[in-house]
Image 1 (cartoon, rainbow, N blue to C red):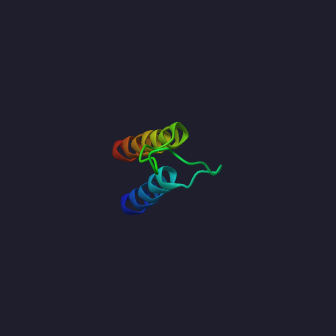
Image 2 (tube, rainbow, N blue to C red; image 1 turned 90 degrees about the vertical axis):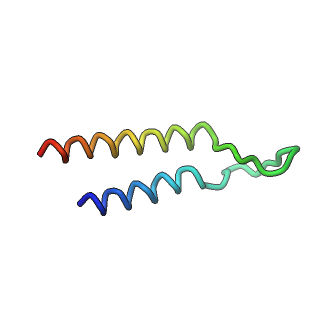
Length: 60
């Protein structure tokens, strides 16, 4: 169960941080390497959810 959960959370967090921008735009210095605030929020929620599930699984 842990392996499945870890794999799912890894891919979900990677997808949240690597998504292309919905609106096409250009940066004056080229591509921005910084993730958007929404991507950071989604990644944080996924990590928090994963930690909560891990705590729940360890209690049992």
